[in-house]
Length: 329
Image (cartoon, rainbow, N blue to C red; front, side, top):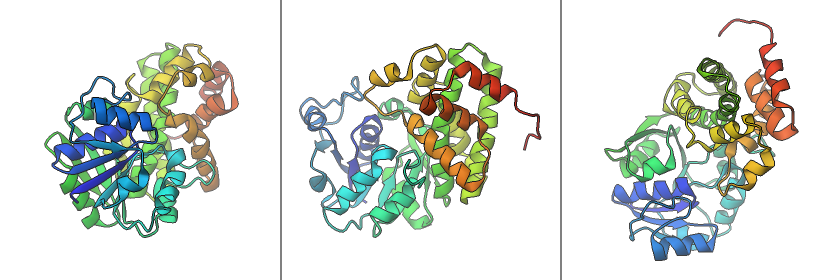
């Protein structure tokens, strides 16, 4: 794995392109928007990471075919709800056999599929792995030490990605449980909105700690029902990612929740943002998947009621707090 194509030139895709470059790999970054590709090539800046200089060796293109042609490996960083059309467009360029590293966190709305399931449909000849964990793009781009999970059923494939991308400041750990990595990454975005709402309402640290802990129980229940291993969700891509996302304003999902809890309308918040806030879209799919699997997820259900059905926040909180007492695990 010497030549990487990074599909998706948002903040996270750009940060991962920088990771690959620091690890000594050749990188081409594919942007959906031609002006983003032009800014990267001309100014060596990306508006999604506006204050970070990019190495001139990182090239960008808006041409999907040019990006993937000749790549030894492909890093998929398109938002989860756009991953299917992006990978179908890749398939339209010819049979894709290069290994793909899936970095999108979410569950597809229309099908309730995990991203690995989507890619298995659209790029059936491409071996696949998942990268997930507690990372903010800006910190990875600045080479601040970070750790992630690289999960694949094929241990050799996971090791190839780890050896190709790992550096002293970007430390990947291998897992054989891609389902667990995906469930952890998708559900934490929904829970981060809940924690942000609590922060915005001024409800205190006790409440947020309770939400994170009970939210983790929901992640584990859904993961087990989907075939994940509980141990995976106690690691970087589970509790690690959940803890980070639920406690920091760098998180788009947490900050959106803070704004909602402070009384701002959802449409106004989303209208101000260039980047996708995955938790808003994932909430519906998470609840639909949970229903199909018979999994109780009251916190995620509450978030979905607020962001997708316009329910009053105070009434939803009151309803959550009125639930019957039950065993912890």
